[in-house]
Image (cartoon, rainbow, N blue to C red; front, top):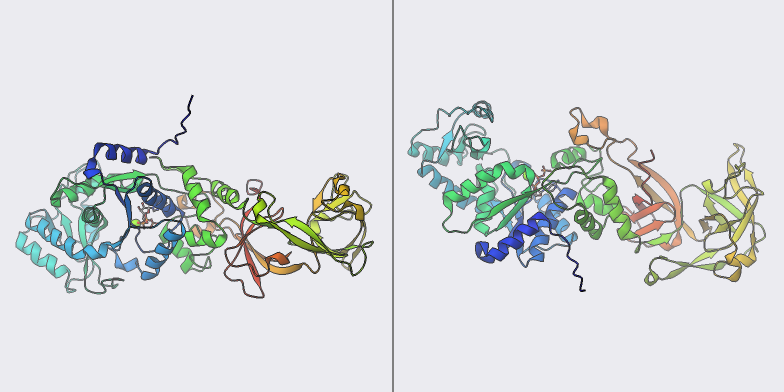
Length: 556
Ligand code: ATP
Ligand code: MG
């Protein structure tokens, strides 16, 4: 019997397949990714990107990038540039780049039309007064005293809102819908507000009145021909208003339709641009690309790959229920991706000298080592080996308990990885009792890869030849916050910062790393995955810990 393997569709894919089958909107599929350029993209945006671009790709549609730049007070070209870089890095390509600000003239004309139709008015009340009149979901709101002013007056005031003579906050344009609607968003929503304090990053000071999200977003979708306007669940309650605005102006049967999926929240971090900006501005992190940040550029610098991020998004899927995803799942994805590609190298965080007393002085040999035992194509390298090497301090113990299988004077035999079996004979200490040198003998008949290498020993340890290593700065990153859900905390979020989220050390690493470039990945044997940082210089290597080999957080 023939077996067909079919990956189950997520609910949005089901909708799209169905719409295409039924010929909705002339069989077209068009999506958009609509970031506001007021910060860097984070891993939550990656979820939206994988959906918006992914679904267009899968079903032969088009996905455009649209900058939702309707609030100049927080927006900047710096963000526009970084957003484009991050989308491309994630592996996606847009059809066109659009800007909501390009539609300001059209949006203005439609607003004028709505005023003429008696469906919009200029309100001169303060934001507080307007808020007070909103009512509650169970009690109707109160109509503004300006609600029924004549069309001519509205037109004149609306024009004035855009000349600069009206101060910020003094007037807004509101749609005249229904102050008693059970949907609070229908209670005369604000369409335009005045912003004079910040020039717009594209239109400068040309505009003083700027459209609000609910009005601009749906219209922009309509202007562009979007068919599936996919966003997150908090917009479910906005959808009727989205439809209402479009219905006011639509001149054909075509309609964009909004669909919502669950936002991504990850444990031990914050995913709001406002909070991330605060971390950056207060110097609590080293910038938007600090490797502890949940930003795409931070993850990239930390050593995350586009494939790992896409794999993670694929694993969590899309539903209609908000929740919290354990960061260990993201860590799992990067381990899986790096395992077959990162070269496995020796690195010692607390090195101690070891002298092999029966190894001929001045002799050097070269131990052939697989760059990645899981991947033959990664090739091999030669590690120098001689009488004087370094090992990790923790692999030696002077007075060891019986079950200590590593080096201790008179103790068991231990294998030096890819080299020989050795046995400890003693050690030397400084005046503080700190061990400075470990002495061993080796068995020349036990070289790895030879017949004698088959002898069983209880443990294998890593080492570096004194001529085969270089120093490197290693930055050990941990979770930025001490609690799973910092966003749920009412108090000062500074209380929740993990003071130990960065530890800087000097390590000894294999010479193999010399000349490595920012972004190169390595597995430090028994320790974790590390990525070369952009702070590296010709004579100084800096590496970031991407993730430890095993999840050690649970143990703490
Ligand atoms: P913030 O609240 O951090 O400013 P935002 O939602 O305002 O985020 P936008 O730039 O408006 O950020 O978002 C662009 C798109 O990315 C929107 O469609 C939004 O729904 C989606 N998005 C933002 N955050 C997440 C998230 N955590 N999970 C999934 N999608 C997200
Ligand atoms: Mg937003």
